Length: 332
Image (cartoon, rainbow, N blue to C red; front, side, top):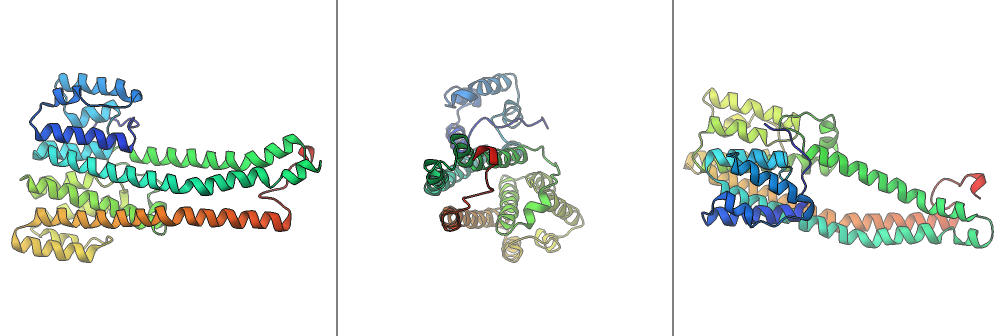
């Protein structure tokens, strides 16, 4: 597997990119011609040209997209499985829909955070004004008191985004020291595990639907799981299948969120011969749950931040100590 580079496309651009590839694949347009008409932001045009060169030289889309920086590791893993199973159009479409949902959710959170962010900035600049006007605070002290919290918040944002991007583009099979910590976080830990499970069942269902044997599809589906402890647990499923167990029986020994519903659907599907469709349906159920959680976070996170800023302002005004540590004497 080639080494992953940071993806140059944001969520909305990835949705548009995969949506275009899905439409061209369904229409029977060769991938070389499809790439000629795709639109990407200016910063990704060099990467697109690199991708076109690799495809023209006989490279496959999954590996070439990862090397060029247009695909994430998850994109590449799913497309590798799709290339083997012959369901590229379906995976392109699912990736387009997934990134479109994520782009909409991210935009909703950002728009709802604008008000508490604006209130915070105003509070930081307005609260020390009486001391500045009264001569108790120098210009340097006023600016320092207003700007240092913004600098700290900016640094935390950059650090968090960097860690997220590093995790998103980690090679398949990589172990992160933050895996256990992230999984133990309330709400977000469960969402992380469910997202990995959704990707596993979704990719497994797609490959089985395309006719790939279970023993060949399972390791490819396990490679989609980015959370190392969960991936290790699911790696035992393949050995159980090799011993002659059914998928439901093999999964019964693996503890994961939503296990009861998954096992019930899989048992019924194995009895009726509709396993691929049931796996895809279960992945759809998990997607709906994740979307609902994201919507709740988009609604309540700005409200909680806004309430926190209001309480912070009230505390500073009532006590007279401001919004943080006292300024150095030389700046007062």
